[in-house]
Length: 395
Image (cartoon, rainbow, N blue to C red; front, side):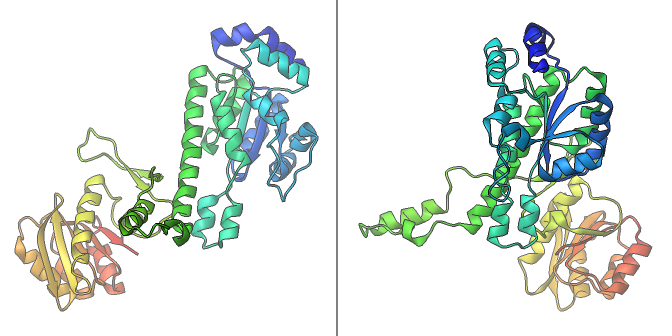
């Protein structure tokens, strides 16, 4: 209990400096990538490491001396691993405010050691859903202990640093090695990232359950046979009290609508397909304005399906839109609507781009072409003769 004694003596220092050296760490991660960085720091600095299951095994393989969570709790992992860290010996060590002398005393009386840092990442819920797994497998990847530890550490960021992003492992390793730990402002930011992480995780679960577990007919039916009331109940079931979604940053864009603005491309993790996840077959990366124009053009051509249609857009407005018996004919008509405005525009086709259409596109300066597919000869022509043309294939 040497650490508690030291913390008790240094409580006032913690309040004034905001820094706390990292001597004891709880590590429980599903994704083991990057653990080598932490393991090196743990070994060199003699950090006390408490860990679970496969995480403990991986750290031991990397030469780290590890205390199993079950040795701390005095209780074995149970229910196929569903219960591991949900124990007062773990959560009291995370939640104790080490600037509070009463908390420090209670830890000492209960023979519980505090944690200085908590490193957690969660079961891959989204990946499991997107793999096409059945409901039982998906439910099995709803993490319980992980979010509990993350939220506890984030709440108690005054005393604990919480790491949920493997990109921060190197920073944690450096702070362990320096003996300084994190400042209060740094711990606040890490706590923000942690809450952001768990919020996105729960939002994905909510999004999946919204489609997988809709309101059953038995809850919609109204016993008083009032048709108006029944209709209202049906409508209410389609309008949740809180609408929660999450989007994940795929990549940063050069700038927004104007050069002084920031922009990024965010994807719905539970949805495949669509313009945002289009495959770039050639040309430079897409810009914000490219996406805006491409979206307008793409939506326009699908209003005419199943007829073959081509749209030419500039500044989010169609300057040409036509249908034709072939993709080439539709493009020729669309371009003829306003050849001047079509310069530097975006072309969308709701059918496979043929070699004939590619040949008609070739002499025209075009920023983006978007289609569900391309004939091999057409793709080769566009790639070789128009190297800067962004060629998008949308599933």
